[in-house]
Image (cartoon, rainbow, N blue to C red):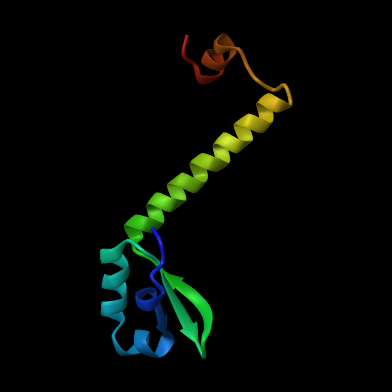
Length: 89
């Protein structure tokens, strides 16, 4: 998902004029839209599906990183210990 600067940067004025068009553009292209005020980026509009997908990826990667840190610190558990903690025996 690469931003197309000619299409994905919109001023707040344009958003006010036609908000539905901006939202549909974000939803249809699956790309975020940078909103600007006086030429400076102030916010991002993103389709809900893309937002949820990216959020799930972020949470997953954070869990993987935390798990790798636990392994590095010697905090790994044996399978039997995990089953017992989860009530799966």
